[in-house]
Length: 219
Image (cartoon, helix red, strand yellow):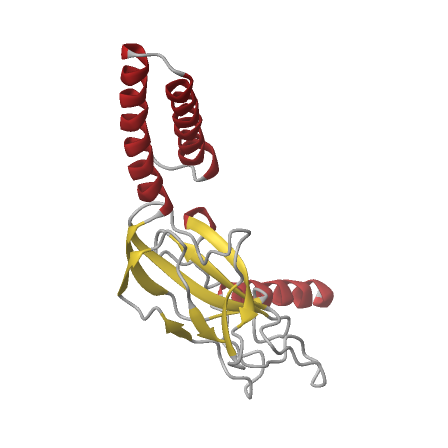
């Protein structure tokens, strides 16, 4: 009976701990991660090359062992989401995320990090115009972070030009040029005009594929 009471009490304690929000600070002497730019509420007019973010990434103890310290951005990550809803772990909710990157330290600025660029050297990439939220966080395995992460405050950023809007504009222009090139070829056939139609036809197909397949832009 005593063993059963101990077990029930332990389970209850664990459940209470799980329901508590994670506490910032792998250790009390570790500095937190904080957003720097874009500041909360900022507007980025052109985000076709992504959003360049900056946040503090001070050295910290990711585990309970005092002699283990992560530095130079190790253990840090950043999220971009289309809504500000927060999960039980303190992070922007997974279903709303549009991008997630590991962090890299900014050259020449120790303790300041940004999102690692993608294959095209772009920052965090929103697809459609609107307001997004970005948030930095780091891995943590001590008793002070119940869900394995420590997080900074989310920051809102509004974008007006994105990869989707840019590609839609390019598609509209290429489609008009293709129609004109086909009309010109119909009036008088020549090798040069046929080649132009072929090039523009391929360009239109490429842009449509980018919108539908690569970026999954809204129709």
